[in-house]
Length: 160
Image 1 (cartoon, rainbow, N blue to C red):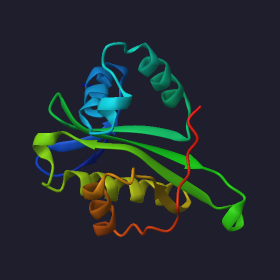
Image 2: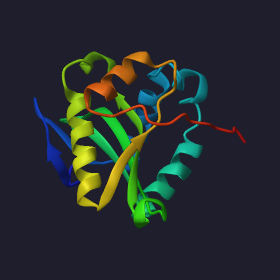
Image 3: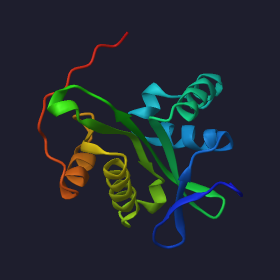
Image 4: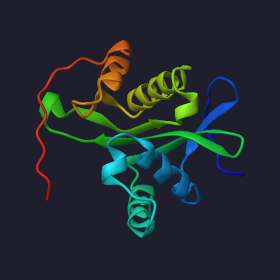
C-alpha cells in the first residue's frame, strides 16, 4: 500500500509492512490456500475477518505483518506480545498465521519473515518467542526447527 511505512526490506524486492484493511482479501486467500485453512476459513464472507482486523489493528500488543513485492502481498504473520507473571514477569511473543504464497516457498522468504519477527519480539522486550503448529504440518515443523525453534511442550485446545 502506498504510504504504509516499510518495517524491513528483505530479499528480491520484498518488504515487510503492517497489514492494511485493503490487504484482507489477499490475506484470507493465503489462509484458505493452506491445507488446514481450506477447512477452517472461507473467502466468501469477509465480515468476520474485517472485525478481527479492526481488533488486531487497534491493539498495540498485536502486529499483523505482510510481505509484499510491489503491490502483491506474498506472505503474512501475526505477532502478539503477551505479558505474564511466569519467568519473572517475562513478556513472550506468539507468532501465528505464518503464510507464504505457494509460488514463493522454499526461497528463504519465510525464514526472513521469521527472523524479523524474532528480532521484533526481542526489540519489544520479550524473553521468548512461541508458536504452535498443527501436528500434521510436518514440513512446517522442519522449517521451524531449522530456525532454532524447539519442540518443548505438548499443546491442548478446546474448540468453543
